[in-house]
Image 1 (cartoon, one colour):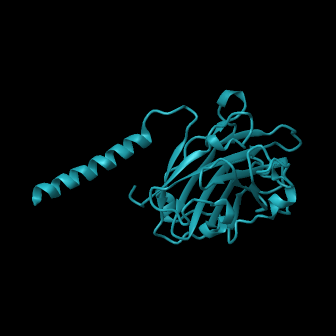
Image 2 (tube, one colour; image 1 turned 180 degrees about the horizontal axis):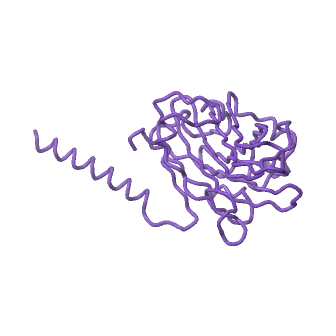
Image 3 (cartoon, one colour; image 1 turned 30 degrees about the vertical axis):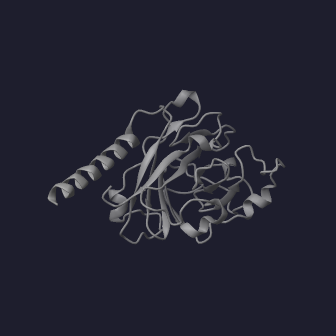
Length: 265
């Protein structure tokens, strides 16, 4: 009867309330969580990010430096994520007064030798293997499979980097729009916008036990990091969304928790 119906509704509301409360309760200060909204709009990968879905999507939050006990980075970084049945999307905007890069060939050498944005994606959260995807202002891409966070295969053997570079995020689209002049140090630039779409099926073996595509409520472990380096400087400024320890980006147990939710939350 109506009483049972209202009890069911109240029970459902309580479940939702409890799950939201559990998601947002007090946690260690290094922990980062993000609700990735479902997009009902086609996202064009052009480095512009002007779709209404991008306007609605929340920012992941402030990036912090890994050096100097989490001091603020010199230049700001903003990132958002979206998803739909086909793809995972990233939009990363970096403030950068001197946009530069010389590395134009992907999957050859670490783009971290210069300036790069790095995405770390562990779909099943097993902390054993994950994707590491680099992009620079020339739209050069490294997509890398990291088998374990100590850079060893499961049998303990050291990794062979050409094998790691051989993995590809199949079907990935990416674009960069630079607001300024690339490789010209005589003027002041504004920065760069990086945009990605990554097909769920393109994660392949890295997805492992994760649902592909995810179901609403599924959580993947993800981090977004930045190497900012003035030309000629040996030591870069390292910053990231989820602040890591060990002065390394390869700390999968501290990646952010990204929950896939419907467009309305």
